[in-house]
Length: 471
Length: 113
Image (tube, rainbow over all chains, first blue to last red; front, side, top):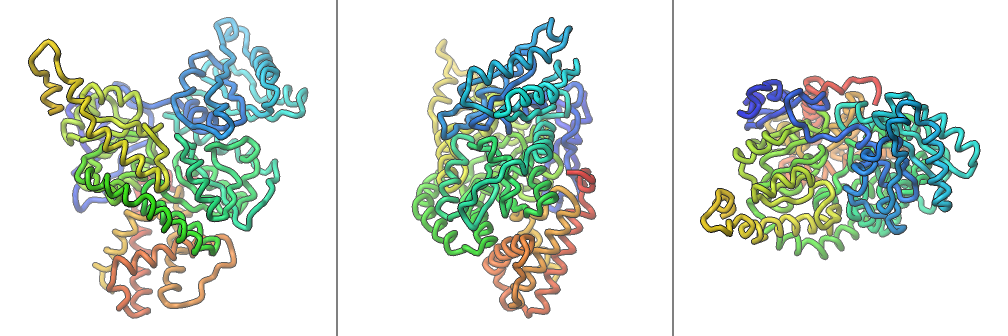
């Protein structure tokens, strides 16, 4: 089967290079969707911008850092609070949002003075906070504001503060992926190596590409504590700014999200000789495999087996309860990229769920290689999907549940198809053993929820097409 | 060496292991060579080198792979050591073909990460 041209795409036939239907006997040598490419004119992309990739995904997670957004107020609001990444210091990062609130006069006359004033105001208002990220946005990049010069001036006047500048305006790349890239590379080149951590264990790792969505990092931290492994830095779940400056001291980089943070793991290997170990943190068998590999690296296999046995004893019966009820469920995954390949085999193996369609907003071809290798035949693999394509794919594969973000989720709800937040979760964490039971529970609750049928009832009498679909 | 047996091992690797899909061709080559060599040493009962961080990494990945192969492909226990080496050489070649030489991934040979 070649790449697929959907009916809704007949006027933009280039979209066929982005949609693949796998059939038996084919593999990723034959077909690989084009990805990480500019959105085709005529398609209504669901993507975010490059600035969003840097701020919302990675930087905004930090628990002790002011996130100063140098741009109009909307850039701040739209990258604040839509991800749920708590912290162990009272969720400082989710309580506050900072912006230079650029207006027309600042665009005309330049915004550097306003930025300097905003930085000083923020530090004055929050005297306990000594770390800051400053982001350029589209307008401040276009007018050429030199944010690094401003940051340097403030740091010379306030020697106790440290500022990282992320120069990645929204237009810098084709999607949020560019923001991940810029932040990763600039961070290692400018900040890593600046702080020497206290070493408290013979076994040290960086845990890279996990953003503490609803407590993922904190759940996995309980495993590392039980294993006696010190995490030098979490990139960036529940992390402090200075942790990330000491990443060079870990013995091993354990990578979960290779798309948003593989760059820094590669550079840590190249620049500091720290090996990179990729694992899947979602799913029972994958999580156990990851723990076994980390423990084998350090020669502490017995500790790993003990932890896995304890976790299986505690959580596997609950997982099996859901597996019995979810067996044969048809699932669609429409998220950023990596969760496609993290989840497709784990829900199949651990829950008996069949993934029938997967769409990636910002994945690269590396992600499609992984997901096509792991995914089933008969499944659609879509890059940068748009709304009309989603509707058509729903008709083609008829999913029982869709894991996607809130924006697409609202569309899905109107079709009375169960939706679970695949980005920020419904009731996470979803990582680890306990977490995968949470995912199973949310999937089961979404499927079994009677409100879908009730909401489709037309109180004026008669049946609607949605009622018929819900039945 | 049976081509069918190599294909069975390859299919298992494809759905299971992330190390074959690292960012660049040289990373993939390094992983395939290092992990499969370590696996070969394990199957043949040789002492595994673990003196450098990369050797310990290859050991960790290979150990899981060898365990998985033994659990999922019982015929491997009845295979002579020399034949296992041939099987793993065949697996290496297949992994290289799919993930490096015939990969359609346009980012594989970019000089920067």
